[in-house]
Amino acid sequence: MAFTVHTSEDASPAGLEFGDNDSFTIYSSGVLKVRSETYGNRIYSPGFWQLVEYRNHSEHGCSIYGVDA
Image (cartoon, rainbow, N blue to C red):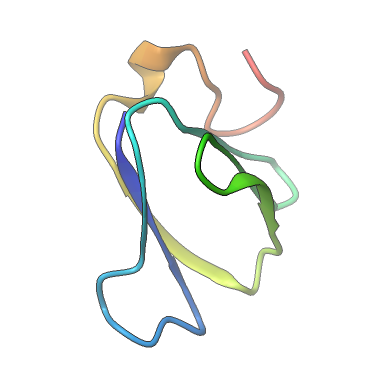
């Protein structure tokens, strides 16, 4: 599941791209947690991340809101 995270500090409109083996969870608090083979675990506060672009996230057993699947 490739996806892109856009933050308030993005120097380019492209955002930070993650690969098919990476995953993310958005918790009800607004915290975004990304698990990446390349970048390791990354935690983004609700005011820092702006947008996540993805396809077929639910097919990969992850939760958009709440706890990990």
